[in-house]
Amino acid sequence: MPQEATRGLSFVEPPIFERGAPGRSGVSLSDLDVPAVDLDAEFGALARQRPAALPEVSEPEAVRHFVRLSQQNFSIDTQFYPLGSCTMKFNPKVNEWAARLTGFAALHPLTPPSRAQGALEVIVRLQELLAEIVGMDGVSLQPAAGAQGELTGLMMIRAHHRAQGRSPRKVFIPDSAHGTNPASCALNGFEAVAFPAGERGIVEPETLARALETASDDVAGLMITNPNTLGLYESAMPELTRLVHSRGGLVYGDGANMNAVLGRARPGDVGVDVMQFNLHKTFTTPHGGGGPGSGPVAFKSVLEPYQPGPVVRREGSSFTVDADRPASIGRVRSFLGNFGMMVRAYAYIRELGPEGLKAVSDLAVLNANYLAARLAEHFPIAFPDSRALHEYVFTDKDLEQKTGVKTLDVAKRLLDYGFHSPTVYFPLVVRGAMMIEPTETETKQTIDAFVDAMGKIKREAEEDPELVKGAPHTTRLGRLDEARAARKPRLRWSAEPPTDS
Ligand SMILES: Cc1ncc(COP(=O)(O)O)c(C=O)c1O
Image (cartoon, rainbow, N blue to C red; front, side, top):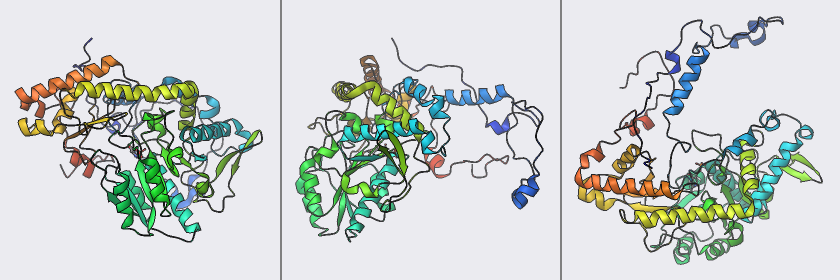
């Protein structure tokens, strides 16, 4: 069965502000049956003098606009999305059903705890399940993303050092780390100290020991991703964490890649003190599009006093919200976090159970290794001597040398075959990097079709490089100026044409 993308009816869709007509409306409201409010009297100078310039459209115009936009997106619900390091797995629809149950979805965030016991119970149960999964003592569900979880965990580490009368500044980070790691350090006032991962792609204790040596007693901690961004298991973890603890530092574990080790390895058992989960990766809450996300932090009891407040706790057979937390780093998110994401993650974990979670990781690893074994016929693996887990990094640097076709061209050509591109040019330590993570939710047929497409693109690059360099050819828009879109985004509609085109 061919999997390739093909032509289809697709619409040019202007911004909704350019649709409709003055006075047109998509709703019919009955006449006001209560006294009208005098806005000037109520709001004074803040009262709006003119109606907001909102689009005036009929219901079909509004529905068509947003459905058309949704059809222009590549999504995990339409096709394979092997974006390495992002764990773009399929989100089971039963999670959506659970999150939309009226009792959860319509619950006002200011409902008193005594009348929100069910929701608080979900929160506590999820905290307990997540703590068990990673071998930690407690979990806070407040942070709204993986990066915010990192920030929160580092704030807790800083609070711990302060409570000991210390203020060490250096956080050691291997050079294969995700960019959010050093950013979280900088935001916390720490100094991110990069050190090289070893030749096998993992951190060697000797390298870390040498790096720590340079800091004498200024070691705030180590930030380490496991499995790391090359898909490799950091097998020296017990020794690495021992080295950091012996210098008074704490270990932050970036848990974004937990999908590879669920039910097989627990960061808490190898000396990690605090870590974040990316629920939108590992526990199938929706991913991308700017959120809402969820990046809970799990911690050992030594860091418990500093967790974000207020804290949701079990007290006998009921559930309370404890705001009396004098040592807490404070609130990092409004209310108790993105509750809908918690319901989805809870539903997913309960649906799978311990054996199911183990099967998730086993299949994620099997799929990645099957894909790697087949794709290695076309593109070399960046670290061929190391057996990776859930994702592999390939390199196309030889192809570029031979044909002039760049990694970005290969990525764009994949769209013509109906596949989202892998992560490219990351990690930075590999030239021509293509980081591919199939996840456990893909079938052998899909992986085979993807590998076949990659093989065809390589042949095209050798025989007709311009075809690949001009890709994509079948998408609604061709190659866009991504640098300009990132540097000069037009985020606000204006009736005036842009001046910088
Ligand atoms: C290893 C790693 N750490 C941290 C993050 C940041 O997570 P988020 O995008 O939820 O902020 C990511 C995101 O992909 C990641 O891959």
